[in-house]
View 1 (cartoon, rainbow, N blue to C red):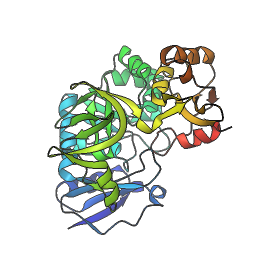
View 2: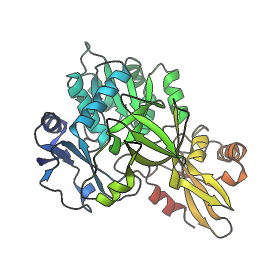
View 3: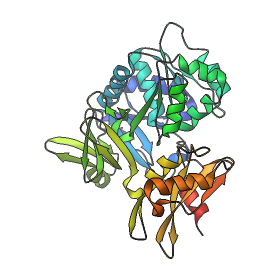
Length: 374
């Protein structure tokens, strides 16, 4: 067995980077504690399996705290695959929390590249803070950054940040569904955006722009995306039942059940959204993720989120949210009806000054569903 060291995220990226370096080199395994995020989870053990290098807490889309046990080799394989897919070693801007796999991966990639990441200062992400961090990058090394979609949108709105991103080797975007219109806008500005898909259970992103990287493997079973390969987690610390449910052996290979719906032609993966985001309205199946995809391509709806509400007549109906002032909301809803059928048209589009977010930066769908409830 191997000791498990806890490092608070508040200790800062430098302390976490040092602990991660030690963990990946055979020292104590690392758990980065966020504070309140793990309040409802069971106490951590003092020791973990010898090959485990990193334990990451995640609630996924359920809100239930889970600890994902990642072998050190899986974390290193993920970093090496990313480096190869993005074009070689780079110096990274750290703009994501270090207690999530996306932030930890920036540190792991930095260790793999033997470069020192620069950190966007705490206090809320913004274009000025990003530009200040990027000014500390070495001019001798290619540059890269990992962002969530909302951060990318913020930087595209600022000329100085937009100009900096044009010179980056790659801008990795993931963490949630990335609107196609946002990616197109960035690419039209001359920025190399790479869409990442994966989860804590796969050591982060293992599919870039629809294509598996490194040793990652993809398959579809009954419409569900399953991922395999060298970056898979051992399972969930202290939860053998959930581990057995989500990690399966098939044909001599181990696979992670993502609970995402998708399309896979043997070369390119298209993720359609969560399988549990499919509702039945008036006897017809409606995919909330498909509605979001159509809406996000409409003016003023780049961050649109669709939730389901109970309906006495239809059983369930979709309701859409977006931030900011209305543009042509009736027109946007009409486009959904034309693209997906009348039953998929949200019954209304609610505007908020800003959408409620989880600590991970993902939309808080439970909060939005409560706002949409009659």
